[in-house]
Image (cartoon, rainbow, N blue to C red; front, top):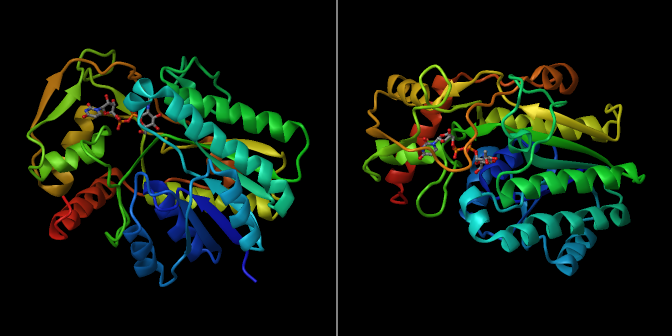
Amino acid sequence: MKDQILVTGGAGYIGSHTTVELQNAGYEVIVVDNLSNSNENVIDGIEKITGIRPAFELADCTDFDKMKEIFGKYKNIKGIIHFAASKAVGESVQKPLLYYRNNIVSLLNLLELMPQFGVKGFVFSSSCTVYGQPDILPVTENAPIKEALSPYGNTKQIDEEIIRDTIYSGTSYKSIILRYFNPIGAHPSTEIGELPNGVPQNLIPFLTQTAMGIRQELSVFGDDYSTPDGSCIRDYIYVVDLAKAHVKALDRMLTDKSEKNLEYFNLGTGRGLSVLELINTFEKATGVKVPYKIVGRREGDIEQVWADPTFSNEVLGWTAEETIENTLRTAWEWQVKLRERGIM
Ligand code: UD1
C-alpha cells in the first residue's frame, strides 16, 4: 500500500505542481480544496501529466467535521502538505477576519486531527514575508522574524508559532516549515499553471497578461529604491523546483531523516533579480515585448530580499535548478495556452 499524502489546496498553483511531483515520486495523493481560487479542471491537468487521477475532496479545511470525515475515509494518510490559505496581501488588509479565520482555523483543525489518525509528517507552506526587510542579505533561516506588514503576513507568522508550540509540546508527528521566496512559471506540459482570479496582483501573471495584450501596461512599482536600478529585488524560483522540495521534505520526515521534530527551510535560488531585470530577461527569453511604465511604490512592499539556500541545499538535499530564462518561457507558454483554450 502506497503512503497517502493529503494535500490541502492541491488544486491551487503550488499545490497542483506539488501533487504532480508527489505522484511522480510514488505517493498516493488526496487533494482537498474548496475551489475558492481554483478549478476542478486542474485535477484533469494533473491526470494528463502523470497518468494518475488524484482523489479529490471538495472541502474547506475550516470545517472540522468534514476534515475528520476525510481522515476517516482514507486509512493510510502518512503526511500532510498544507497549502490551503488565502494569499492576497491587499485583500487581507480589507478583510482581516477572513484571513485570520481561513489561515488559522484550518491549521488548528489539521493539527488537532493528525494525532488521532497516525499522521507522521506535516509540511507547512510559509513565506519569506516572515523576514520582513532583512538586515542581512542573503537571508538565512536564522534571521529574526520582523513585524508583519499585512494581516496575510501575520497569519503566516502566527501559523508558524502555532506549529512550533504544538511540536514543542510533544507530538506524535514532525513538521517542516518551508519559506517560499517568489514562485513563478508553469509545468512544462502547460497542463497546469498560475491562474489568478480577476486582475493579477503578482508580477508574473500581470506581466504575461500584458505581453498577451490583455492588460495595456505593466506598472513597475517604484524606481527610487536603494537598489542598483531603483526597482525592488526578489528571488524568483521555478514552481516545479519548489514542488520538488516538498517531496524531499516529506521523504525526510517519513523516513526519519530529520534530526529535529521541527525544521525550517528557505526555498529560493540565492539570486536576486530586480523588476526591471526581470522584464528585460522575459523579453530576451521569449522575444515578446512588455509595455511598462514606472509608477509610485506599492504600499507594504519590501525593498529587496533573496534567499541564502545553503541550509536547504546541504540538509534538505534540494537545490533550485531551472534557469530564469527557461522559467519565464514556461510562464509565457502557459499564457499562450490559456489564450488557445479561450480562457485568457
Ligand atoms: C507577495 C508577498 C508574499 C506572498 C506573495 C503571494 C509580501 C512582502 N510579499 O510577494 O509574502 O507570498 O505576495 O501573493 O507581502 N510588482 C510590480 N508591478 C506589479 C506587480 C508587482 O512592479 O504589477 C513588483 C512588486 O513591487 C515586487 C515584485 O514585483 O517588487 C514582486 O511582486 P509580487 O509578485 O506581488 O510578489 P511579492 O510582493 O514579492
